[in-house]
Image (cartoon, rainbow, N blue to C red; front, side):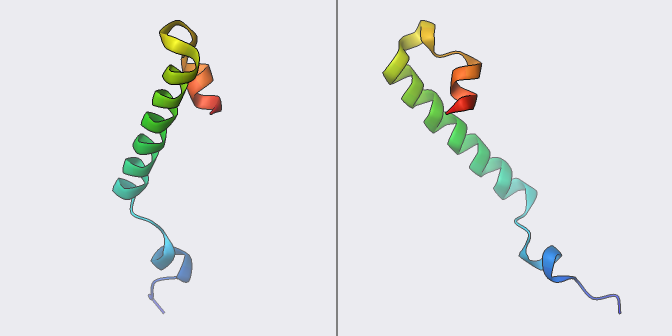
Length: 49
């Protein structure tokens, strides 16, 4: 009773998830810029990648 569930123990801290999300967004943005150029790298294109 009162213990921590397995799901709570295995959960990644919010700060780590945020950092990983930022890293993935930056990688996607750089790839889109290289592939589509400035004009073609919209938010939608980056999000899809």
